[in-house]
Image 1: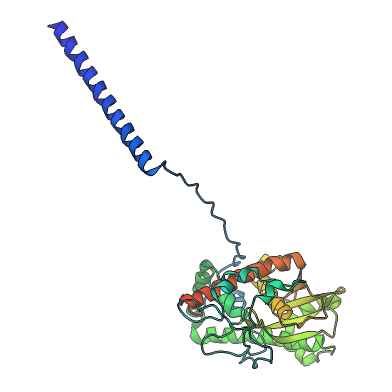
Image 2: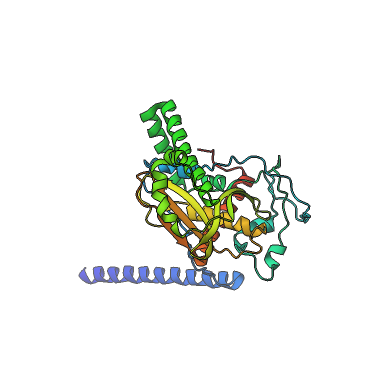
Length: 353
């Protein structure tokens, strides 16, 4: 009996091994046939995801200046731009993209992030772009630099701004919030008024200085190295190739080198360029428009400066940007501008805050 039992066990084990061997052989044969019919399996490598350049984060969602930075209101009210000059417009031969009409062809929109900040010596790249009309169109408006930056701000920043606005309205009420906006606007307007006179070579009257209060006290000492009269003061700009507009605060010499200048106000310290939010990107957008419109044909300008005046009256911070930094922020501006027009075309631009 015992021998018969062992024999059954050995037979069962041998049978199982034989069945497994048969299944393995069958799978191998099927794989061989598939390979013969369709070829070997091609394994693709995983693509590395390159992170997009990050814009500086907001310091705090409850800072009162975050709203001012998102608006960045200039003393000049941006009305309709003047009609185009006699410069001929190169016809676009490529059909428009599907969706809302834009001033760009598919090729232009795809290559927008390669447009030079400073005109190249050969001018080959710029020559490929048609000049766009300088008047506002029913089909597509030339957006302001502020509009582009606000519409393309990171979603986290947008949500922080909305939370801040809601908290301020809850704290001050709708009328109180509107009054706060009015005071912020007047604060910036008064400082710009004093700076305009000073940059024109005049000494501002005491009444104007008093209205600007501590802001003028903050920035006055930082103006020692700024040359006056300035070449450009509060000038309306239009980029004839990239179709955007804006108002530049100033262009003059600092320590013997020409700079495009932005004046900012703040309640909190801004000791680094990153702490000024999108100010350097805005600065480069203005320099690009100046360069493309031949405003600087006889003047070499590749540098920028951000003056941050404080409401507390403490000495202003001055952030100087050399040509390398300006080109880096110009590339960030082109990405934001490209995103704006793509979202405009697709109808996915966010509602204004």
